[in-house]
Image (cartoon, rainbow, N blue to C red; front, top):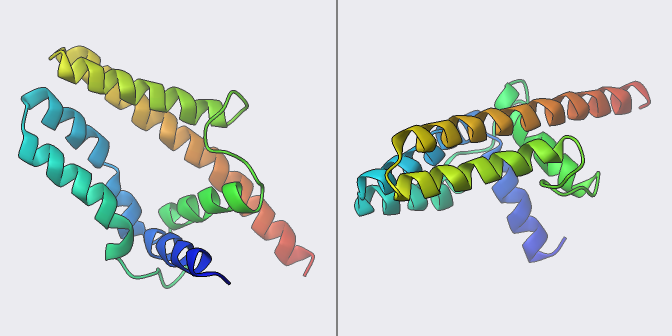
Amino acid sequence: MSLRERAEAILWNRHSNPKSGWSRVPTGPVLVYALYRRNWRLLIAALGWTILNPVLFSPPESDDAWMTRAVLAERWWIREEGRRTVGLDYPNVCNAAGALGFCYALYAAYRQRPVGAAVGTVASLGLKFWWLRVLVRRYDAAVEASSDGA
């Protein structure tokens, strides 16, 4: 295993701790709020949290937590299934639309349009969770099928 592959595995394993995943959820709304309020310290802190978060937590003891399986499902989707995370196919269109919603939320926050910022933020979170929900179901089915065939 190369150094890059080991580092990637460590990051994914640490990020699969549900504390890592759930504590990242508010990061998007905090970024939008910081931009809306022109609070550059908060914006920098949120960006720093985004970078540091995946390495701050130890790997989970089990994969029972939904958020753990969501992170593992994303990794499975990319590595084992050879898929991308955004695109026009289902379910990636949900993630792509969510990313566009987040971009709109940032734009609306910059223009200081609170309703647009709020709607874009809520839409982006909802679509991200929809995408993760689909991936978790597919991941759980694949894990169950592989354990049945083992």
